Length: 266
Image 1 (cartoon, one colour):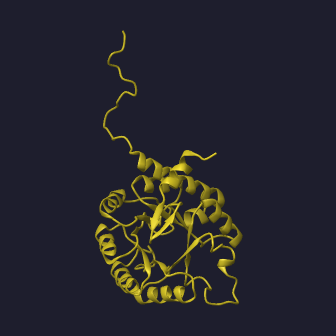
Image 2 (image 1 turned 30 degrees about the vertical axis):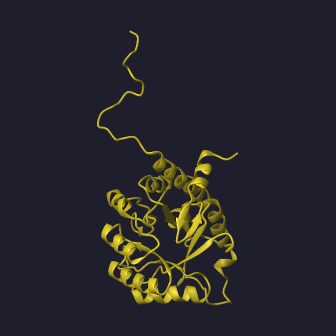
Image 3 (image 1 turned 90 degrees about the vertical axis):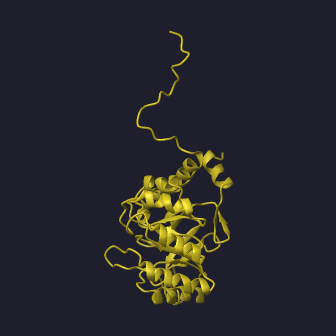
């Protein structure tokens, strides 16, 4: 039997970079205890897009065990990312490598500006995005929750904007919902909340605020039961999207009776 949430998902596809997806959850591949656990969690998540760190994967060495031995590339879109890069030049180099070895010409662009917080370096991200876009990449940039930076990336031609919810791997959840709402108001490209999601309620809130999708890795991989958490995130993203589309009630300072009292017989 098809549930209401599943039916709504099918009638509300996620469009990104000229492609259509049913899932609005994007997952990473790092920090799992084993490759087998990673594969099981990805399956449970319902995700169709899986992101892979180029510089942390032996993508160019045929003699090394391949992450892709555990991911069906006919089932999932592999989204290479430039995690661990601290300059535009570094990020561009790894994006080109991912394309050269046949992974994808889509790239999740990350240029880190601070080693402790892993916050993005906005000027370097903009610089890298401009060059990669000219080279024909589909660019999905990780950026701070800065509406101005997001607008500039969108205007440049990025396929989405990906503001953080909180520092990478922190699990703090959404720290600045107001900025995400501002970004949602003007963004014409998909808004993907990236980084900081710790549990299912964080994912649901991101979607309720109007995010088109959520990207996460540590929130699932770092859970005590990664497969169960992946399942929870799957449902949370769907439920949050359905709640957003439904239109929540207005927040009021005082109570409003659920049952009308006018016209009642004394």
